[in-house]
Amino acid sequence: MGDGMKLLLVSGIMQQIVAGYLTKNADIINSAPLEVKDLLTFLEDVNPTLDGLLFTDEAFSRQEEQDKQDFIAVLNWLNKGHRQSVKIMVISRDFAKEGQFAELSQKYTSLRIFICDYVRVPRSFFEQTLEVLRKENGQSTVDSENGERTEEPEKKLRSWLINRFSKPQNKTEIKITDGLTRELENISRGISRVIAITGHRGCGLTSTVANIAYEASKRGLNSLMIDLDVEYRSINMYYGSFGEQAKRDEVIEASLIRTLARPQDYLKTAFNIKENLWMTALGYGFTDRKLLGQFYNCRKLVGLVSVLRNKFNLIILDMPMDLLPTFKEAIIHVDVFGLCVPNNLYAVLSTLRNIEVMLDKESASYLNAKSRLIVTKYNDRSRFKENIFIPEKVNELLTSGLNESFTYEMKLAGHVPFSSKFDAQIETDIPLVNTSVEHEQAYGNILLRLMEGIN
Image 1 (cartoon, rainbow, N blue to C red):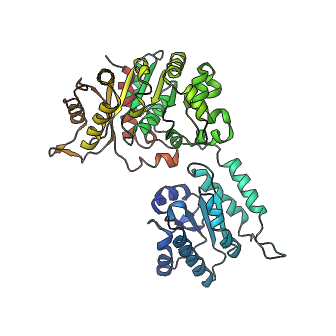
Image 2 (cartoon, helix red, strand yellow):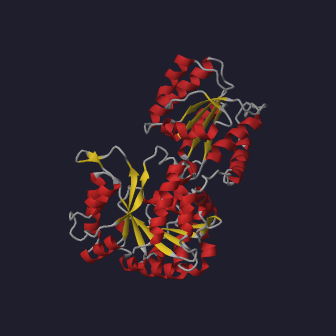
Image 3 (tube, one colour):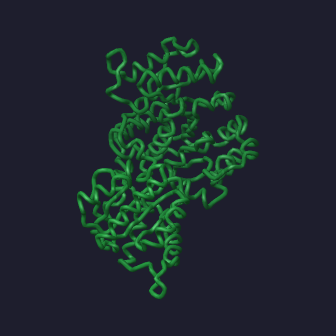
């Protein structure tokens, strides 16, 4: 199998993203998404010439028995057409897949199951899997003496991938916009801001944290992200390198707890993403509730912020609105809140309802006074009373008296244009701010307005 390997990709809704991973290493036969249930019909109708089929989790439904039958039908079709040399690769995050396909792997020697034990499969795992298969150069994985499938190549493959796929990849960054650079340079590099990004869940606040922090680091600002959302830990998905390191290093796995306990040791306990960009969060494997209860509290957060404020130009807290009561006493130590609200009526009403439920009137008024509005996932087709639901209208509606404790007119930090690449951020490790000049400018302006603070 050479660089021109013809590959049929069966990846469901992940078709476009996975195809983007593989275009340098293979020729993808199908441009439209395929699932296992549709694959046999496609093969019978098109009868393509191919070197391999690649399946991902998104190709399978939740109906395990039906999936298995559909999969076997495809394998039988290949055998009947004397295509036993076609490589069949299944890349999965589900350890159960090995057991489900164990019997098939014995019968169909061209079938290989690759398990990636990370939250998401990174680009490099796909690339290195194909590289290993190319190196095999079509060699059989069947023992020549007894005809049984050998295990040694699989062990070598697993070890090689684990050692190799986490290596950092060179990524091209969008060139920084000159106008924004000049404005940001007018803010002294000696300035320090503590910014909390908040909003109701699902409004894009973690994406806002990740992109603002990345933009700040591009512009030379020493930045630290603190993910306080210990239930969902969503920031991990935007920085795959953190999750990979957390699985190997118990200090990084408990980074948030250790940094809250001893903020002066942040050089050891926080995770350095790049030269001037750091984050502290919990790895997905952290389960020690006793430690969590001991250090995950308002007093420790205030201590952390007080110690590290002079170490960073920018400290960004990922603080969903339902966490505000837990950290109520820390609100006074936050310089500015970035309040994330999409431009639709449901989002506006949900935000106000959350404020009413989560905060007393005094705290709600204080949050209002310290907030700047960030209109996330901005949809330029959204309407309110038959007019375009512009960011200014979102701001006006939020403070119109629907919530009697939230009536202080806020300044607008900016809006983030909706993009089809929004969800792809967590699969590619490439934040929106690095995908287009439009998003680079949007997040740059938001960063500028938040760094200015509340006047």
